[in-house]
Length: 112
Length: 111
Figure 1 (cartoon, helix red, strand yellow):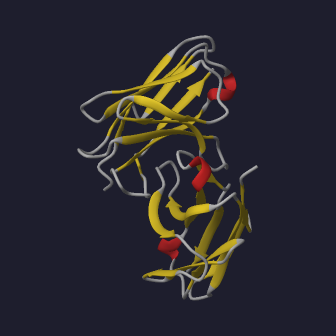
Figure 2: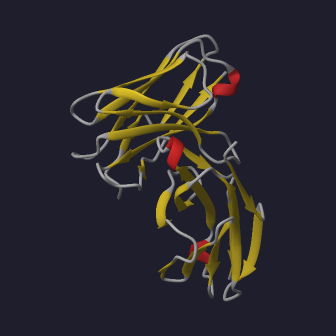
C-alpha cells in the first residue's frame, strides 16, 4: 500500500461536461503529480504541485487545472470534456527530499 | 527532447525462462531512472531507482541495471505472478519536476 487514495474509482461523463477527480496522500508528501494514461500507453505527465503551487506542467491545455490543499489532498479538474480525455488518471505523491513518487490506484474516466 | 523507449512491447515467457526488458532514454542530464510494475486497471507500483551508470539494484527475481543510454530489467526464473506491465521513467536535472514514462513492456509468464 502506497498510502495514496483516489476517488472516484470510475466515472462516466458526457462530452462538454466538467469533472473533478480527487487524491489524498500521506502526511509529509508535499509534492503531488497528476498523470493521464491512455489504454496501452505509459502515463503522461499533466502537472505537479508543491506546497499548493503548480511548479511543472506537461503538454496539456489550460482546461486541465488543479489544486493542492494543506491537508495533503489535491484535485484535478477538467473542463469541456472531449472523447479523447477518456483514460486512467493517476495521482502520485512524493515525500520531501525523495526522488521517488508513489501512485494511487487511479480513476477511470470514460467520456461519451 | 527527452524520450524514453521500451522494448519489446510484449514478451511471453514460460515459467522459469529468464529474459531482459530494455529501456533506452535520451535526457539532458539524468537525475534518476525508475522502474515500476503495473497490474491491469491499477496504479504503477514502485520497484527501483537508479541514479548513475554502473548501478544495479535487486529485488527477488528482478535486477535492474543502468548504463549511460539504457537500463535493463532482468527477470530470473519468472513465475506467473510476475505477469504485469513494466514501466520505465526518467527524471532530468534541468526539468526535475517532470517524469517521462515509456509505453511499457507487457510481460506474460505461462505456467
